[in-house]
Image 1 (spheres, rainbow, N blue to C red):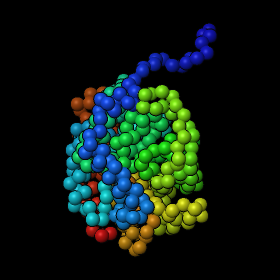
Image 2: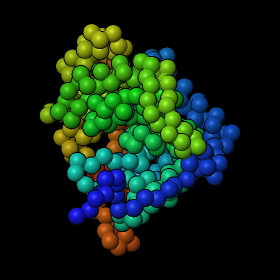
Image 3: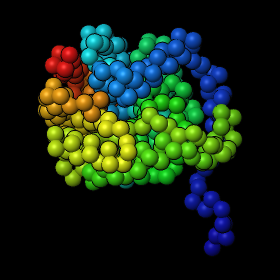
Image 4: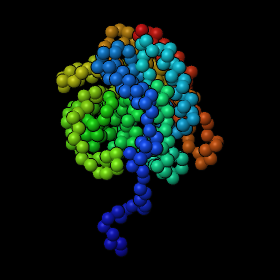
Length: 347
């Protein structure tokens, strides 16, 4: 019988590079830094209402092919020029995926999609892509799933989400209080809004917590609180993007002394888990905005070069280019169409 009392279930341990070393290897250019600061200010101005444009977080459910992601990004940059008067586009760049049980956890955890778990490689690929986006002037959005990851990549992100499974987590609320960008909290998977309301309150308050510093050392942090945090309606047992749902959310935010500023996720339970319904969701939200709604400041949309989703194959050469390996996405042609239509209607 084993008498081991420490790391009994750990099979192996691998030391990886520190955040500061990765940042030295893949630095942010002066141009990139200026673009990130500008995009963060724009996002915050839209959230606060100083900028009356609608923010749209749009892009692949997850990034698994950097080449395809760059092609998508350049298309998005071109579309931004077409709709810039009424819409501000931020590319969805999700490197970490929460799993209900098991499955591919994203490019950072498993960049080769073969369970080799080369996190070092994943962090390098992720940072290189984000730095490239910054140089291109393309704002990026991601989900902060692992509380350590922002030390490696957070300086390159313009907007951040906390997912439905982690909104209630004290660790994520504390971490968010110290992030340098606007943060959105999704309502619970059952549709509960109160956990997101509580998360906003916690995030905007001073917090003390454990984390790692740039040198990779375990440290205690004292955060002043992130005042730029908001709710994301993503549906639950039923969709919650309809007019009555939005009014209910507005009232709840006001009752809790929070700004009535709402982002709506057009995917997940709001689309009844069918990516093809996202266009219908956008149409309803567009009608609400056109009718005078002032609380909806942003949308989220899952989109890729080509529609649908595919399985990860042992022989990855047989996989199709530009198609999601996680949630299904609408294709670029539909993305272009719905965003152009949205921009025209709310302008």
